[in-house]
Image (tube, rainbow, N blue to C red):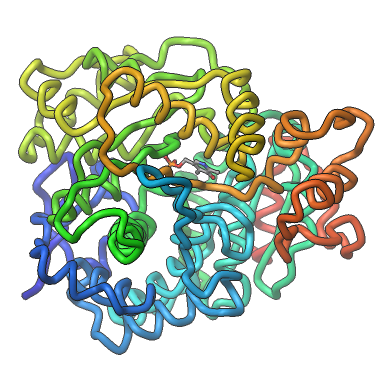
Length: 499
Ligand SMILES: *Cc1c(COP(=O)(O)O)cnc(C)c1O
């Protein structure tokens, strides 16, 4: 059976999964999603218990990407998740903390953040989709990054045939470790440039390049086309469904629950991609009780889930969990579509309200459904540091800041509801990636140390190994030193492509 894809906003042509991946965003501005959600029975889920991560991934992807052959999916999955790319043979190992709680570590990929799960496979899904549709163009991936996405996209796309990748980062908007990770990137088809300005300047610049007609024509002339690696692409969302099933099976195999018992997931949330993948898993039949949405002080989503009003008219706060510093969670549009039974007119209007007024409100009917599935709360920076400190002291387990936001919210949830369903906390980054705050939480002399010294000191104290990709970063060759004005982004792109 061929599963078709539609967009959230209008009924123009339905497309295949490979076309949805190639197009990225619908022409109407809506996001692609499948017209129905494949279901799995508890028995089928149980039959995963002896399968590797990769074999589970092939089964789940094949339910959604129905115009890919089994062999194609197998090849994409095995190129993405293997002992060269992931340091854990389980890919996403679950660390059991106690009888009621475990932490799912999604950060054992090449860049030490959870974006690797999707961005290691997206390039293969994209190039495979292109050849399936007899599309011979070279895909130019443009990225504006506040840190994690840029590096994960570079690692994913480096040396992938028929792709080129250009990453812009705001010069003062990323941490030293994140910057070093990017400017030392290897690969023949990669370029990294610093932009004077903040993340918004950089992102606006990239958006302008995407919609610049003259540029698009010039690209067409050399058989190139733009594409994006951000989380609105269905090809980035679908690989994330896999680890919800995989972690559930890990809990069953650990005997903390029996097959069929429900679990909760607590997810540190920014753009709503990760937690939406969890909602898809639930709709497919995975026994999930609550999806707990954890935000930092940029708590638009918390307010939305509690009141039904989405309001981005507020100050943007810089926090110590920067990958969740976000006021517009794009993937929420997909959830609204699902909860309103595909009411495209409604979605179009809500998104117009968001654009014009910066806010929208959903009906009580949809709010009731939303609250039945999700729970939401937030954590401040000082909560976050305290949680890292306490969990390290009491459980000898070290978390990064994003994971600690989730842990804090999980504790608030327990307090508020007394619901002791087994809970899986999703861990999205290695503690070494957000070294400053982690050092502050566990090292008395943290402020005397520079970033590199902090990594070594955290390692000395905790004996947690420093991830391969973050080792010796200060000794690597720097390939990318360009710093440009935000008005020079177009010129940079033209120089890079020789057009
Ligand atoms: C991207 C990111 C998040 C947020 O994930 P969403 O899918 O955008 O909700 C959380 N933590 C880290 C470390 C990230 O890189």
